[in-house]
Length: 375
Image (cartoon, rainbow, N blue to C red):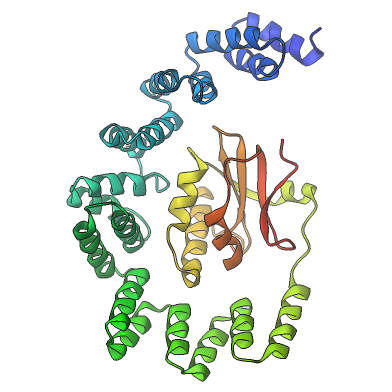
């Protein structure tokens, strides 16, 4: 027997509503009426619903990758921008890079989409189209950072060391702090300590310079760098390494007492200032975090503020604006604040985005990204 909601959906589906057809499929696909539900979602596909094409494509991926591709392709050819990214990701996973490049180009046409452009720039660089790749990088808020990510990715590819070196030099010339640290570390390994220190200072990386000074036995200077950065967690670890366990313990106690309590679920709803719909969370997070060093997270927070400002039509965002990134493909939402802590941003690198549906939020008590009230 159908529930009242299912009866309503059924009536709407019979009347030709594709959303209702999808709704019936979602309600029935795990139960005894799965076959009937499958028929309804296929009717939605036949009716031209690109959402049905995307959803069914994702569902069919494990059983029939060829059908998944055809469904994504059909949605993409109908102009569904989310399908552009899904299709590009599928082709990248299958090492079909020329086809991935086609759809990444389509996805970034008509306006710069910074969550997808790093992938396009990397594919261009991999095939030696450096001028085109650089043009894509220069459209970003941080071209040096984009070039550095290309260099780091190329370094992991067999036979592309020369290209990686070329892009690292490009990143340095574009002002990438990470590229400056890269060359500083090289100078240090080669024994040119004076040249290394100059490059560490040029990079403006308090963490990297502090660690260099500590390795050189210049403990007081290293401590001063950490104190100036205000990174209490790192300073506490430094104090422990140098035998001041009591001060380290006192500092950790102050950190624990200063942590805010986690708001109740209802509070989150009232403070959402802007909502972003991303074609997929994985590329969004990759573009946001990249391979940044821990003390460049001010740059990440700057990106989040720029995003909030852009979506707020130029209005300056509040100091702690909540941005919700919604992935329509997986029904997963990432709740991020423009003043996110270094620790929260660092943890994004290892965040599992393949888990349950619902909202992921940073919990300062457990110091983890957690699903809260996810369904």
